[in-house]
Length: 65
Image 1 (cartoon, one colour):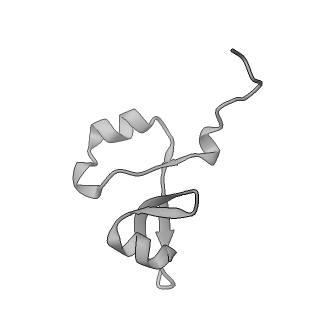
Image 2 (cartoon, rainbow, N blue to C red):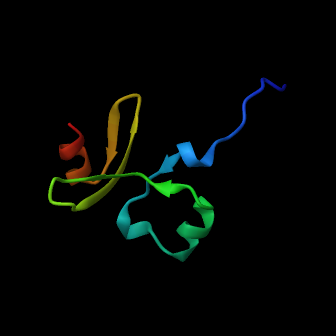
């Protein structure tokens, strides 16, 4: 059923634990950016927020909250 929606990869983000990221991960995400958050010092931590609930590295969750 068509509902008039179109996928917008630029508005999407994905997350997988760093120890599972490899070349295959880069191919599978097909240009969708890794979700991340940066500290005031510019250190980047990986994760995503779904319905305002952070999922990701411990540092991502702490910074998000």
